[in-house]
Image 1 (tube, rainbow, N blue to C red):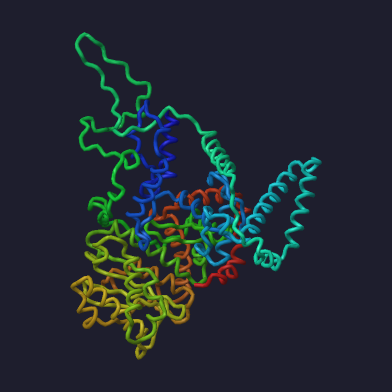
Image 2: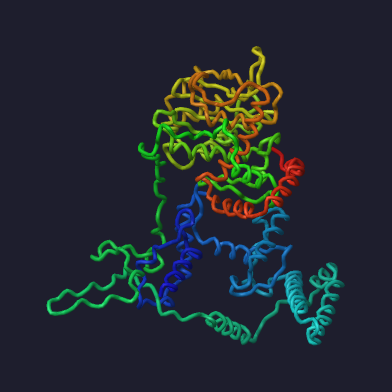
Length: 612
């Protein structure tokens, strides 16, 4: 009984819809009973209704919103109805029995090589024979021959000595040789002849009826006959009888399976759409997104240090885990990071944290999601911060001074909303004291900071400029115009100050550098992590003046930032990362040492292929 219930929940979750973050769908559980009949349920209608309902609540442009509908159904529908010329095949029913994971991966590679998804032609399998060209017939026959040839080769690998299969191979080679001699000109000549222009009429319909009967037998065979189903009302177990003179009835054998809280009174029962007849137009509308929840004050201790320690020595575990990243043990395109906000991080992004390597944009964006997530635990006396991603100031038009078009502002606004998410409080910047804009100019990283609380705007840059130089004038002009226009749209109280009163100035820091050009990304991450808007004397950044001690601390920060991002609670893939780290730790010391030494020799050439 437990197996049947688990199987139904699995089917409803995988082929129907799942809850947020991939949790199982238990909505159908209260409607199950021991007397239900699963074969009486219209499962096709259930899948289609899940598709419609999840499509309405899914927002395509929001990276935080994940489609929870029947992805398997959409994938099989796509590969079945969209033709791929690089992967010919013979169509079979049901489709789910034909396509394997290896075939889907091969199909994905071929479509990406040909320019991406959605470029194929929609197959019209219901088209009449008389309206199809001779090229279609030749193409279909070639697909059949290709499929047959593949099956024969697979059979010969296991039973190569069998004479019958060898005979099949010889016959098939003759057919293949005929198609190789059949040129395109032959097809055009035949198709232009009068004999093939005549319509073909099938007077005998017996083949059609036979095909329908075969299809019915095929669909009905090998289908398990279930004794469990779903009713149109909640199932309530029988209560114990407490009548005088009678003992309590024995409890059901399946205790614990269906003893979940249900509406015993039978009022306001919600019946799933696939179990009851209702108007198809009555679909759920989009609900208002939930507000961002902060941790309660009792869980936000003033003694919690969110910044990475910079003075302590690296532990043995920190060295082993960071060495695993720098050993180049796997594919550089493997995903090691997926935040709850939708940001992805591939392995090569974290490999760029190796000492003396230039940091990638994606690494900083992953770190931004970690900082925004850690804001939940900030002390109430600490200013509230929001960190934007590099996509805000990266476009080329942001580095060229001049009047900006509506299209350019539209792109800027879309990037801002994408970073802020669907929350109305976030989009209105309600409650934020400081906003950070990481930027890159000429492969150099720095950050712009608007301090709303103190009405100032600063540039946190590790490079030391001459007093007469004006740093990044075009970028500053465009940021003030674009961001000020966005504040005007949301009716923010700082819009006038941002546009006319506040001017950016280069923040003085004792640890500014002149010759360090590769570690600007680490300075950027440290500045965003520790800057709280106060005077320099209260800024606990941890850096000293340019020199050997500063370089030593930067090397430690590179390793610790790698661990902080990968092992953060915001990373959905944290369990997978911990599993990979465990496999690496179980290796012998000599094997780990060899992998690390080989990796650090090749890491520079490997990262060149990706660029910053």
